[in-house]
Amino acid sequence: MAEPSTEPDLFDTIVNLCVRRGFVFRSAEIYGGFRSAYDYGPLGVLLLRNVKEQWWRSMVQMRHDVVGMDASILSPPAVWEASGHLDNFTDPMVDCRSCGTRHRSDKLEDPEACPDCGERGQLTEPRQFNLMFSTHAGPVADSAAQVYLRPETAQGMFINFANVLRASRKRPPFGIAQIGKSFRNEITPGNFVFRTREFEQMEMEYFVPPDTADEWYEHWCQARHQWYLDLGINPESVRLQAHGADELSHYSSATSDVEFLFPWGWDELEGIANRGDYDLRCHAEHSGERLEYFDPATGEHYVPHVIEPAAGATRAAMAFLMSAYDTEVVNDAERVVLRLDRRLAPYQVAVLPLSRKDVLVPVAQRVFDLLKGRWSCDYDETQAIGRRYRRQDEIGTPLCVTVDFDTLEDDAVTVRDRDTMAQDRVGIDRLPGYLAERLP
Ligand code: ATP
Image (tube, rainbow, N blue to C red; front, side):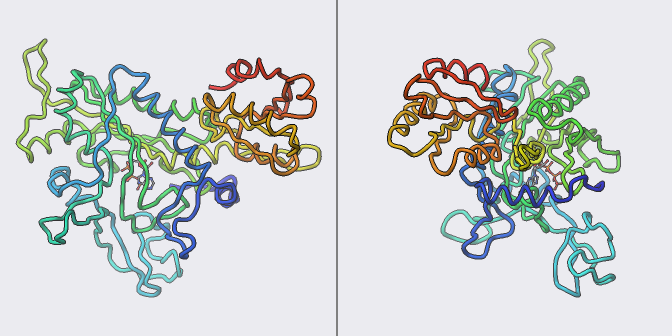
């Protein structure tokens, strides 16, 4: 469970930065807010897109054995009956008789005490609460029209197994990957975007011959841990933790979590599970379809086993932000700098005319036009240049390009590096090449 945090204030600092700079806003804020959902602002949407893009790149684009898909969010009860979610996708819930609040009993620090009012002995017996949201499709709101919002993207891959196999001509080992929104009626959402009722997942189902499942499970545990390290998460803040036998779900022979050291302690970013043939067998039984692979080499049909790396995009974005946050003292003043990997930074370049003078602005706009097709660029002509540098440091922009009065003479600009603050004078004609050596 949670270990003491090394930086108790980091959480508030990050939330503050996110709201102030436009990464994340409270949903429906002008109506008092909606606790279980968040809106991603101009910078948050860029960061989140970059996180998803890097996942897609490593899981789909760079592999010949994985294809993508995008399944529907709404689905009929039959899917969730077969998957077991209608019966089993529950959390144990307790009510406090004293203050009326609800809590997940398996997450209580003290099983006797209400975390809100502190009263002891006032919690009810746990009841199982199903986390799926349901609604009705079509104009008649009766039980025949009931549909569910998916609580995970995975089932879309299982129910399309035969379609993808046929259409893509892949054979095991092969994977189907998907990024998309999922919905869970969490009893206690919280810790900012860590646990929300609407969130984005990045999941891959990797179908393998049964006798290779253990090997592939190990492969994906290592590969997924490495993905976070490659994108710059501090190695002391991310670890792979195997579940004990008592923590495994009934269908899984092995599960490991990639965990991050959040300000409240170690917590899950991603789960990697060896799911055996559970999912394909359940859907085959319920649907009557054969969900198997015919191996022409042996002349046998078999049900592939599945290794599933299941990550949260929104949780990952939060971990990348927390890991990147840094402060240092420069010329007696504190500098806040988000040392985000260059592939994740919302903007890779900021173009800054030294002043708003008429002579500089057209040149700065020409520089912006020169770069915008290749990199995500910010353009900012407000405030003193020092304050604009500090803003770009705080949102993690790796390089700032400044157009000054000398530019009018030498057709060159100053490029400032976020991490070292070193400045280079670069001719505008050489600028795209110079940036290409330093940016993805
Ligand atoms: P938890 O134990 O934290 O509720 P889980 O083990 O139920 O999570 P999975 O079903 O394995 O989570 O989902 C895979 C990933 O989806 C999680 O590792 C997490 O990154 C993300 N995720 C799950 N639930 C939420 C949520 N309510 N808000 C944000 N992300 C979530």
